[in-house]
Image (cartoon, rainbow, N blue to C red):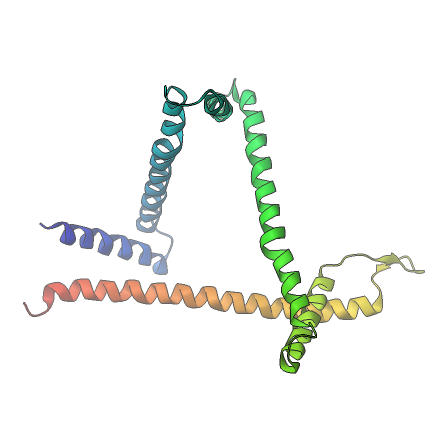
Amino acid sequence: MSIDLISGLIGFLLTVMILSYIIGDGPVFRIAIYIFIGVSAGYVTVVAIYQVLLPGFLGFFDSSASPVARVLLIFPLLLGGLMLMKISPRLSTLGAPATAYIVGVSAAAAVGGAVLGTILPQVGAAAESVSVRNSGGSVINGLIMLVVTVFTLAYFQFGAQRQPDGTIQRNRILETIAWVGGIFVALTLGALFAGVYSAALTALVERVNSLFAFIFSFIGPQ
């Protein structure tokens, strides 16, 4: 049997196993999910070992490496060793500093990426869209986008004051703006859901088409 035939059979079986979820969350579907998770975990582990751990470990003992480079390698090797302590319940507390460091760096990267990659460019684009240098049509579109942005941000503003009757409510004007912003949020989520649904439907059509193509490759004219 050729490699193409074997890979085609494996793809055919796995596709049928995944599509079995249509009739229920049965053992066949779970086996396919376990295979996917196992292969993904194995791939990530191999990549981490051969592209991160081994180069760093071997670089520490490389005679051509500078003293500064060796000193800098001590910290990731130390953090990696502490992370391995999480395997043992008795020594798991030793891995807490490394875990906290990773979580902190990840949070900083996420916040920094959101601020520098999303918020600031969005603010700049909104300001540029209503600039007097733009043409009339662009200014109108920019004003609409700016109003929608302000209304949407007002939806996530939760400042409120205590009323004479003891209830806590937002200002009526802000409440109205937030209600309109909620409509914009709903429309955005609906558009995102439609995009995700269409992407999933496209993937389903492609997989079903591959199944029929594989079957017809056997029963079709030779």
